[in-house]
Image 1 (tube, rainbow, N blue to C red):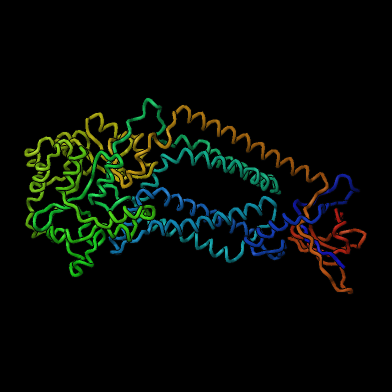
Image 2 (cartoon, rainbow, N blue to C red; image 1 turned 45 degrees about the vertical axis):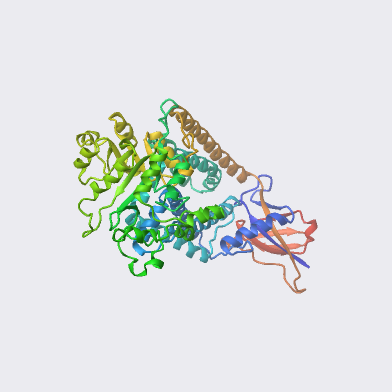
Length: 621
């Protein structure tokens, strides 16, 4: 019986110092490593569908190196795309709303895309880890053709998605860019740490480069990359680099359409829920019914937030302002929330809470003002212009002001944003807080007697908040429910932040992070110095190991020992597979002599040896 051995050479051959002149010796050591063999089998099979570590002499290594670079690009794009969708969660509702406007159907597309992106990202990282294991253990890297197709599709898909979304939803990229002011310092430290850890493997590959010129080139290139990372903090800015004494007061919280994560938007239950979660301001949208009753509704039609398809199937697309108040009261404004679960919060609600939601109706502006007056909270609202032909198309602003004045709510608690008939409104109600919905300089705001700036958070820069504050201009920003974005606005000095998730930020007693600028500089420099020292040590050690290998007897690891029964007439002399089969080698032992090839790659040969007693096989060139 013969025993088949599969061997992986872990170093290039060299002349042995203790042998006779002209002799090279490699030692094949160790016995059956069953656990390690199983792991390597899985790695080889999952990455290249090579369940036995064999090397095809016809394979071209440079082609596989190109595919490795393509895989790195795919991982990079997938990582960026994953980061993008994680940080834009704050605007997921806006994204879904944008798609709803295009399609007319409400689906939580954000979670669908996030799930697909997570799958692609996980697959790319998994392949990269398998490739890293190959490199670490000096196993030839051969990516299976199916993986190659999927990697190309992933790379093309991510690239096309980035280009498409940049054209269709530029606001998402503005948010992602803004997020770097909060994540940049920590991303920098993480990348420096990762590159430092990888330097051991990189230095090992560098030490195997045969020509001195290439070694110098790659060493300088790597140092250039690391040098760029080391100085990156010079270009990183964040409003959270402040001392405790400089930290502004926590922004006041406003409920955007109430608390739409916990109750149907623009219903009285939603506003009550926002107040229960410490909201000091309520935001809503006001329209006027055909019979002159202001009511609360964001959309121009009633399809998304009511059951109009059941009650008035022939008027599904009609403007909401063309209905009278009795017709609006017949609609249910809560069941859609339970059915569509727009924020994924319905599952954790009690049966009593769900029943309360299911009984909500379209709210009126009068009831909204009475609720605000009862709890002494401020209000801000968008007043919609009724369609042409509507009885209140021309005097809607003055007509709506009557309801504000009759509510008993102090004028100073109302932020009036509508520009129509503004000077008439100011004469009738001089103590209203007049606000602007477009960005203006403090001087221009004062000329128009405006005291509030109400803008999307993307329109403010960190310095704007202090500038407006110095000029006694109140800043209101929307819509924020991510803790990192709320922290960013807190450190920037925003006065009031309106949110869909007041429940998420109510207990935030301090920014997500805040650091003294001096302490960050110390952390940055210390990290860079430690990283640089570790990298230099890795390169020196790997270089030294390479030199030692050339002067010592080499050792290769026995990966698998497979015992097979061969015919009695079988000749144990067999060609050894390798990258360069032209070179010959011999394996000598008591059982006979076998011819073979070079010492790099996978060697498979047959020997008449007891496996259990086989500890070392001397391989002489």
